Length: 121
Image (cartoon, rainbow, N blue to C red):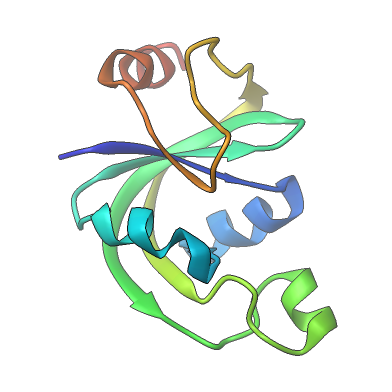
């Protein structure tokens, strides 16, 4: 099992958490391809913080327009999707740990950082 940080906007995460789905752009396919069912994912909203975490249940490609930018454009922006079982949504976003990488849409997360985030709820 690997642990990943998924990065997006707060507005997109509200929809992603509600629907149990997340998507990334085609250019993130190599990283998306490494994620497997059973992997843990942490939800990180840019300029907001860590919103919660869950477990990947599956991967799929979809042209369904879910997020505001997709609906505005009339085409999928994030077609590479993850089906996620949301396990915890924090009441208040947590500050990003110093060693948590968020430079890409998908980032590998150190198990120790995940442990800290999940234990200190």
